Length: 231
Length: 255
Image: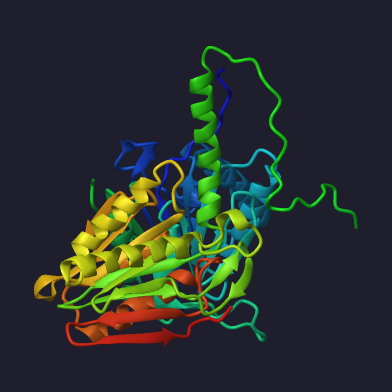
């Protein structure tokens, strides 16, 4: 008997690393269903606030980037929903949303659909109000945490131990709270992200094709792409 | 607090099932029932005790390492559990998967039983051939032994590592029914296998000397088990070179 199944997993992996004055957000561009590849060039990274790009010049300095893996249908809907809410916020407050505010908004948006969730595993990266790098990592129903680095998606289990090994952030339970940002320089962090993706691509069939890296720092956001294995 | 079902002693047989009408497709039904029961049992059994075993090849040497935790699901039972066994001076086998179960008799000592049978077979070989077994031969022996139990397997996934002729390193792993997987870099198994694949893929490089190999395998194992609730509590690491065998106990996060 045919049953309505509204969810699909389109695979892919997202990583974010926060530094003292930068944040690196990266994701592969493969879009798969089961054993098939639907696209080798599908971006999983959304620049939040880009709806206002053409509108007002001062809103151009985006400070928030969202990378999501899971069901791309839900992810598109989630991004649209977030963009609409962000637009309302900007009109109400006459300022751009900060990254921690966006993090809380994303959590609330996800929890709002607690019993029919968005099948989306998100990593939100950006700069906080002091200009420090921040990474927020989520589950599908909006439980979230501010960390120094995170990986989500099908290759997360392969990448996390390596990131732990290289970046090892202090326990979030320590008092007084320690800074979670990584000690690496921006270029070192980008290299590390490239390395872990190259490794995960070797063993995860859902990760590959191309790696899209977005670096957010005080001068704005920069996008970079490198090739990954295509098999 | 009351116990809802009476405790059953192990030698009391459950009552025979009520007779049912034989359907024309009974064979098919029985087969799929069996497949379903094995399919939902097997993953739980493999994760019952928790384990992580990894072997890596270096330059004329190899390393094999395992974690030290023995648990029953989330509860820790022992913190010095050995999963790597010596077959002879240059040949070792690590057995991940179900270790031993203090409460349920029917699965007790499956891993140890598997190991003892292997030692027994190797001793027979030594007596007949008056030499040690080559790693390749031993891997075939393990594979055959596991496939003997094709439909009621030993719930362990072996990792075999040894030095063969001319001290050529050999590593291999197989599934619980003996499908061999040879590799020239590293092999992993256990509940932390996915993490281990990621860590080893990032940290391994070819032709490492014994000391560097020790550092690499320890870092990879430690990083992996720290992301696995069921494995950990330090590690046993064996570095085997043509001339010596070093066994080291690595302390990591002891929690």
